[in-house]
Image 1 (cartoon, chains in turn red, purple):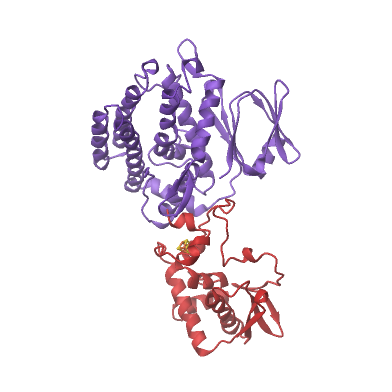
Image 2 (cartoon, rainbow over the protein chains, first blue to last red):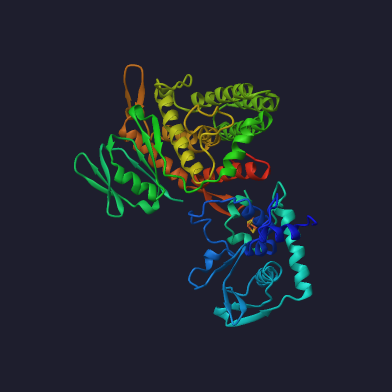
Length: 182
Length: 330
Ligand code: SF4
């Protein structure tokens, strides 16, 4: 068996005995596209106090910010699906900003279902507030994109230091802001 | 940021529905809105019970106790919301690596000297001649990098602080002569004011550290165990000139505090209740004062600077990114 991040992830997901388990959650996939530094923090459980109002304005991609929506939350190993509807995986997002990260998160779910559990599904990205739905399919290009993201994530979370901070529009509302920039 | 509440009078403090109620000995009642409280400071003889403690614990409010002679006596810390094994492991690892410990400790000393220096420059540019002090501070600053171990570093810090304290005699009126720093008990008003100010800075650092997952007992410049929260000693040194000393000069020079505000006993001198109230009122106002933060692009309170310092240290320990000590920049 090759020791590439992808096969290590698959081995971990299938419960094989691996020396160095490697997990990727949907949120990690999203962070990879939003901010690599935040991904590193998350993977290391770097917590900063969220009780403080000046920093608690919200992790924008964190589930907790979408409080009210009802969801089934189907946990399948490393991933947790919002809901399944007519056999399709529905991922609910409050707004269509940061669409690509959400699309990749959903693509990762489809990839995971396929590769780990052997089920092929299609996905729908739903923005209820905007009454918009977008279909997401695991095309060969997306499949490759997911796998290259997995390799990228592996590189980041195994590094000793996080990637340097670079100013992004969402730093403003990021929970790590005061931690990152001082 | 949440507020500190100071209680001077003797009496009892208890949970009353969803607030904290203080009843003083002469029957006066006051409420402390717990959801906006960072910490409660007890300066008088105050009774409380376990029901109050668990209530404050639930709300994450610390209690800092000032005992006899208004010396800091200890804190009742809420069970920490933040715990992170990795943070503590890295914190200890850095302590255990002499070279790494030295680097962090040197940063604290550099920052402290810088902040003492800004106070001296401030007064030097006025009517006081403080060139000598500035020279001594600069000399100490250049010796920081040469110190071979923590005790030498401590020596450098001590000589800087000695030079710095000469400012006090120069700036303060003759009726407040200082001579030299003495702690237990403070022999004259200036020592009493320094002790009181320092203990307030220290207690506020304890609160700031609590908000991170750092272990307050693992420190770098000071020896862990020197006090229960020795990391607070490290961080407090950076902030004393900014939060406490400048205030002391102002209060004395503007005669808001006079010799009548002290109780002098055989060999000790202490602020009386009125004096402490004056000092604290101004101290709390200082904490709430804000300054534009160059990296965060917004105003932050002086109190929040303490919190940021704890974040910076934590970030250094977890990421290996450099730790730059707080240096007054304004
Ligand atoms: S503040 Fe900006 S750079 Fe730092 S983790 Fe958040 S988004 Fe990333």
